[in-house]
Length: 166
Image 1 (cartoon, helix red, strand yellow):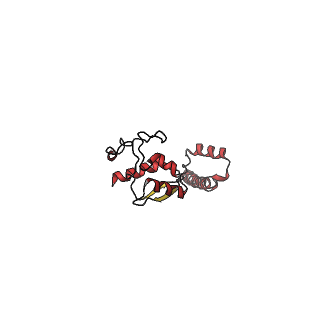
Image 2: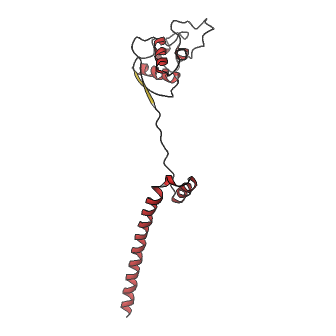
Image 3: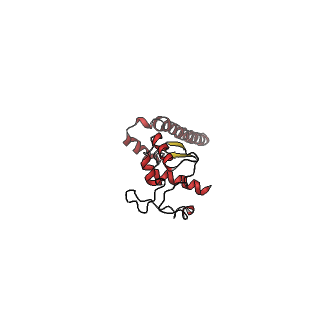
């Protein structure tokens, strides 16, 4: 009789451990299918509670920036490039020329024109360029991929970096 009780207890403990293991797998499966896969249908405060209880943080949503492709042709002057950007609807030609410099304008004595930013500290090839003239001839003709939200200064910086690299 003692052996029967002993075997019965061993069998009962094996069945209990098996039931616990199967139960844990079932709970995990139910959690995955009912809660995680349907998280969007729950109110936000429930999602926060679920994330706190499961010690997970939601993955950040990566939204890529939209890009544009521009093509600056060889032989274009600053005025041509400005008109190209105006034709694309990016900026007015004047906005581009205020940053890049108007062609054939001496900025030393011209008080009507805005002063040019000195970029010779950022680009070594601009140290020989007179500081009172625009970037005429230094904007490298090429095809560029720019962000749709780029500013004129960022595009000019990209063109000068390309000039420096080549």
